[in-house]
Length: 396
Image 1 (cartoon, rainbow, N blue to C red):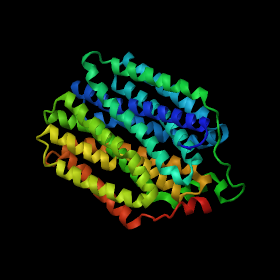
Image 2: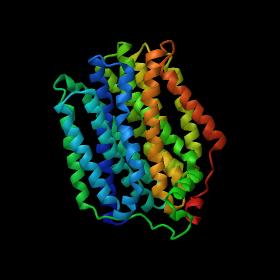
Image 3: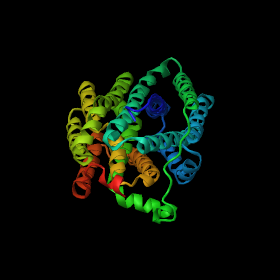
Image 4: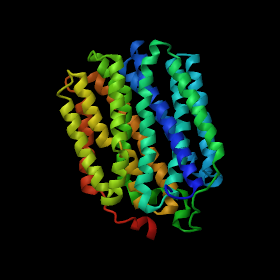
């Protein structure tokens, strides 16, 4: 993929740009709307529930997206998703209402899911086993980069509340136009009348093959929404400066950017399971230590940077781990389940986190995150599957 012909490289970088802009819009929306709602006096529980609109949209479209992808190919799905995201972002400034913004976030969730599902399936289906980790790490890097830049738009509300939405919608439109220069392709055909030809059975098989690989994206969903939608609320209550909160959020994403490609390459060499275990352990320790130093904005920024370096590759690690465990014809199903688990985690994060913030005031919000990471560490340690050189994917 990375060393193929010029067209393959052009297609790859087009998909990378699309994912980066998608990450930018998501990274901007979560803290931006949280800050706007907190300033307007909206409760943390309602604030957290509103953030779930993005991921409810993902879950709503999930049952209906695999068949169109197999029938029409990757490009039409990306075009439809991009248009939905662009239009939704453009509508935010027209009416500031909790329910209306929830609906718009739901639509963005639908559009973003179309983009991510099509792009990540396209990449996992066309990448060689030897470079899969590197390919998906660049995919994750592009999203992480966009997500890191997104929160830096939050201070623009001091200039105009509408300005961040306008900038984001313009960038989405530009990225969307690039798709028209890419040739359409379709996933590998199903295996005739075999057991993999039945829709329900395909998902059951994908889950049986790779359920443990869905946990890192699940956890990353919890982290992404908890940190970006609820930590600003928690930080403002701790009297953190609004501008510095955006720096702290960006630090987490920047940490993931720094280690994304090295982690992907290392995963190709020593295995995803080992990397995932080390990441969960490091993340647990960083957030646990961070809970002791919440009096210092600067120390928390460093903690978030280190935690991002450890955990920023969880989504791409989950994808590559799944691709190792799953037969190639089932990759569309495996990628869809990755997205579903990520969305479920993204729903759990702000919902449970918002309740935690409202009712549990004696313990740090960072300690809440550390406990989640430690539980996942134990599950992967005891139930994670070892894989050798892509044998499962290539030989089944």
